[in-house]
Image (tube, rainbow, N blue to C red; front, side, top):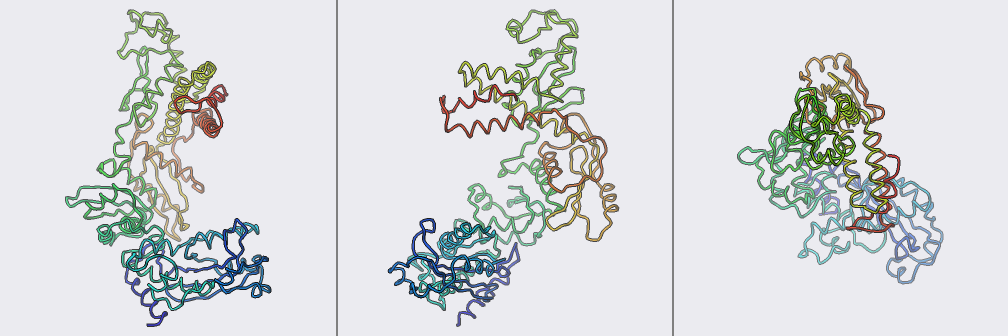
Length: 599
């Protein structure tokens, strides 16, 4: 069998499989090989020859070969190895001419090389040396792929000469660039035939292929059959139809197929695949709809192999009560009681840090029971320490206490500046006394408060809108439209090409889910869902089509302070390796450097 017919046969073996991602038979590969003067490019080694072959679907589209004048002597042992002498390259073009010609030949292709870091590294080095922008080539390394596919029984090593024999290459490698590139083409085709029989049919699957994926996993790749090449949600189920795992993807079939052919190294996923007996796909109009459906399905089914988003109900809020003598408390549910809520927080520990920051700034009472309008009790320890205004023994009148509560409410809902200033002064004082651990604890409290307040203000701004309609172009240039009501995704759709956009939006709004508002920053959806929607709304190119209500955040809100706080913390971390002293493994002098800054 000739090499051409052999290659064609190998490619035909792959034509019967489902098309996923970019089918390998449709990808143009540029197989390249270099000869050099020896050693790494960074040490001054030069290219003496470039050889390349463009192939697609098993057919050779073109070849490229040129000697390169290295402007230096070729070592004798290199001349003996390659057959390239100083006389042969004396009249050859320099790399300044040869490289642009090769880049033009390779444009639009996927680079392939045997030991790609060497060849591609040389090309990239000289491109940068010439001030040329290196094209964003995707790269396939046949040596790396062979180590995953070819066994020691077949070949003692993965050298090009050895693999050329294994795959019956029609060209024998001889340390000349074009000959070696031709041999690498045959090796590439042989390797693709091997992995094709294991379910690898696209460039994406090839790039992530790993032999660590078991045969049992690969045998289940048929579970992806019937799934569309569309955005959506997929659910892995066991033999009793229990949901094991929920995920989302812009391409359902490709993503699900990757569990059986790609480099999936998570042990839990391997265990899950072993139990899976079926996969259900839910096609969605847009990727955002897929992300939202994923969150809702995870929260509903609580699959054992999903780590995140399983318990959206287990969030904590800081509540400022509505009563004669208001106080702060931690609650799990938001009630329609006129109170102010800060959060949600993902854990009680973080919520407690936020609570501590507020109590340190505002000396409201911390007792948990309700007080009558005219209480008469003995003061608590906090009152004696000056950390509570002590309404329980009438140490403070109602207007004074109400004013304090008003400042607290302002910090939660509009401007956290008073909390930032108070904790900043406290941290600076502690750092000045070299009490760095305590200063760090106050920093964490401030961070918890700012993040909670920023989240509350961002979410509250969106969830307060009865309806918001926005549109943005997807990757294919189509307009994706989303209807959001009280922070919940109520409808999603794609305007068909040539369709009436106004009519489409009107119909989408008419068919959207009815969503009732409610109290708190997340009345109709989980915080994660509303934040996913916000992330999409804030992405480039999204346009506001329709809005009921007001969508705005306070100009001096927590988000502004949080940005400064995070920037200073990043600055502290970047300085950490160069500063002392250290306590408990933490560098503290940079903490002192910014604790006194104007946050």
